[in-house]
Length: 371
Image (cartoon, rainbow, N blue to C red; front, side, top):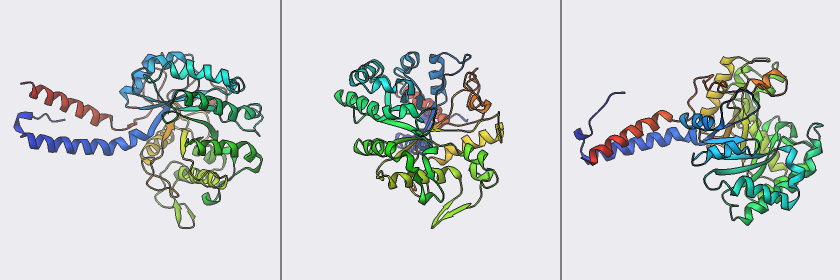
């Protein structure tokens, strides 16, 4: 960029320029403020946590999700100003249904790091379903663990700073088309309805893993690639007066409708995972994945047809390819970065260049003011 001299501007001109730069930065920062990236650790070739946190910061990624209270990651996050979604693994849910165990967990993994680590959410369990054979054994422990952890957070007077929730997948929705008719499966309502009531009572969001890729890959005859990748030039699905140009919005609005039918109209949704694999399966190309991530980042600054002009807090999955994940192969290819920290795609996570410009400007102004 071209250089310029501070001395050539009056103080009023400098103030005006700073105001314009600030407004420009704020406009760009709307996107960055909504975007986090999931830091999965199921790889034997990943960089140490200190380098990962530096990578987040150098790419202006201001929110992170981790899936267990990894102590190295929590230590590295101290003073980073990165907001954190801290996970409770499914394997710990039964233990944390004991109040004293939950209190000890919160002391060890939250209070020992707060406020140096900016914990925003605690995700109690991930994709637990009472009708999924792989996770059904955990279902009875999710809400008791949520209550106990929330009570421990409340005891520390942090209930307005740290929200306790759980992360679901979209298989709990029985009907999703059209989005206005979205409804949870009847056989999960006895599990979900008390959780939704808990979230509503505590003004906490529901965390949801939303993957247009899997819906598209499972039904490419009826779902177009452009609809899944945010590239459709026109409305694909009309639902009354609402027009849908992308599958992400349709899925999210189906979830909002499902929440309303379950008594959770006031519950917000945070997209706790969304991504597109670059290899290992149907339509898994670098071009498709890069297109999806870039368009998703740009899209979430707005809202959905059902809830327009409401930015969508969204966590991209995932930071790295993870070579120790279970098959299928696509599960190992969701990374935004290779394990050597190189970007897979050209992605702007939210205005990092304007931060550099402002840093340079502030340094110049400070130097001038000292003369």
